[in-house]
Length: 464
Image (tube, rainbow, N blue to C red; front, side):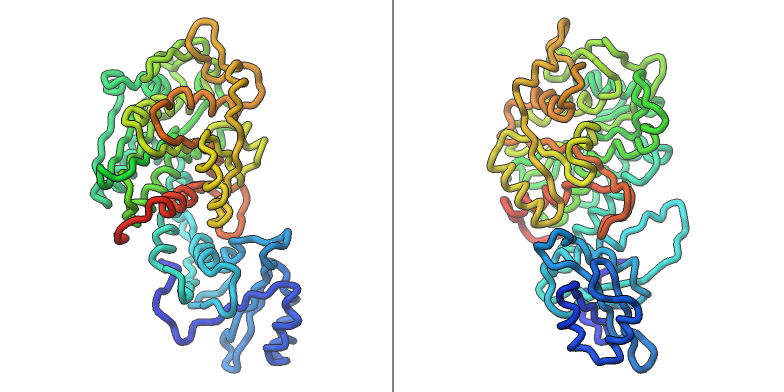
């Protein structure tokens, strides 16, 4: 059920946002009975707490919701994303002044998400009237696109292999009348995508390259590239069981690219959009690629394989080479690429790599504004020595053990020459424990950020 209500509802229950410092003043606006009832529930404005206020008929007269003030160390921009899980069935509205009504409404919508494919849940109907001045259609489009990406990541690999990723992408393309092509199996060799083929050939589920094109061909060219590893065993360098448990999320980059594409096409932004998703399963069989192999890439560079568990950068390199051939204005790449990125910045703050200072500044600024943050890490050129190979043009992952996220980004940059601006995001794609507006599970990190940047730079036509 859509959690947002666009038209006013006369009996919608008001939600009063109150911080610890504001509770005493707010209490003076309530009747003494309501104050006593709230305090009996222990409510004092603490962040994340709430209290229901009764009316004379035994219904709900209002909701008090605790939230820290903006600027405090405990401030949570998506605090209102807790509400769908806290409130009983009903229609609600925000009352009073909010720090950011758009973020609060989006948080409510994102917090209403649940993954229901395999387990029947008790259905709740907690809905919010869209506040005045907030574009409810825009919020709904963004929330639906995020839910689409979350569903993809949350679906286990037995039901989401390369073919099913293709199916989801095809349906998305059809919805927005976009051109769709796919190159599957040995046709990858015929069409010069040798590394995508090498990584995916060990699986019984054929590897493929998905290609979506949408928009005015004369508009600025923007290409999204997303890593679509449906499951990653690690290949011959097999992962331990504990590291394999969440590898259904190794297609989180593809989910991000498709989620962002849904937002871009839904808002009819003035760009010529291309989406490239190399979709594979990194499996183990007699045909699996091996440590020490040398692969030829689409770009012509020869690549020595250091570790088969660093497969994502190989398939992305072929996709990037294709993207680069048409000299696009912007290329954004999304990949659940390295554990080193998580060690450096944790699961909530994906590193951003780009040589474009203006693009980096815009992305970091907008990341904070839309609560989809990133942090820039350096493309430290001296570390290219870690990728030296004695027998090939480049070693694909290096053996130094240092700066793993940076060396991965440096490797990928070798396949981009003609693109005017390129940014690589090393995303986690997963929320390990529930947070406001972000239930535990899959998350298309930075999809909203990229959409916000493109909307700011290029605007668009009438939303579809």
